[in-house]
Image 1 (cartoon, rainbow, N blue to C red):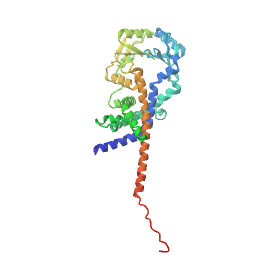
Image 2: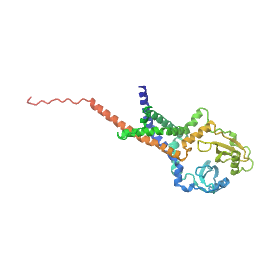
Image 3: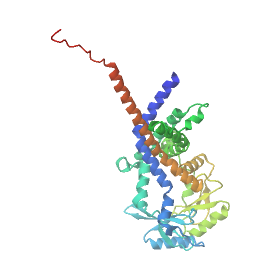
Image 4: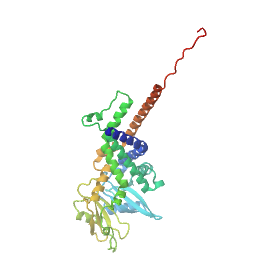
Length: 391
């Protein structure tokens, strides 16, 4: 009896959370799927931006090339390790007290600027990203509050997935029946079978996306309540230099120093100082990185080349951040994982459609049942025989 009551309660929770938040959750998941394949779409639309030439130009040549191409801008970041074999460079300049940035692809062989990163993102993918992160509510609530709203949508998805798994569970003896799709007993049975089967298959993947996505939006608040920070541990002195003297060392020299000091680490990205007292920050990859990218940061003095510090990839927060990024953005398994993640992210749309069909069929059945009950409860009018005048 208690099991039946629990099942009825969870069914109502599953139904009403889905009805109230389902559309928003589907939008978030669908836009997330589109972002997973953004780079593949860009390669298809703009193949000329993904054709590097052989060789390796010096980083100084790259810096001079991009700064000449964009007058007034200064290179402040360069990503060296990309799956395309291209460099991605970010330039910035101050415009009325606000930072204006420009991201471009650079050919590592010739140091030529190939074009802006994500050329069509201004039209389409920028809007997709805003929907995914803020549901376009950033101008109304502000980015921070909009992120919290999206985070609670993630909690709603977790509730839907957890209750759905409970409702699906048929028991060990009837486990195989949970994957049965009945095709010849009407649309209700068909949609019910599809909803349950597709739902239980996708729940593990969607649960990972929901948990990591919710963490991205809310973990800083949760850790803040616990007196913890989500930032990677690094001494404050590493990011500042007190040895300002003459001109800073060239970017090539800075990189060479770091690679000689850490020959087994792969250089991924360099953050250049934008102020005289700032240091270089070199993002590097040490061993296996679940994020598919860097997992340590090396801090280097721009005037002396002294290595000031290096973060620990096995520190709890660094380990947590790396796995959070790797699982949510599906960057750890190459193209097969990316394609699979795209398909899994589209499944909430399918589940919403089949769920709505099931809800409508059951609602119609309940209305027919109530109508039939009212007819049975109303007694028929008594037939009174008419008397003839002769009688």
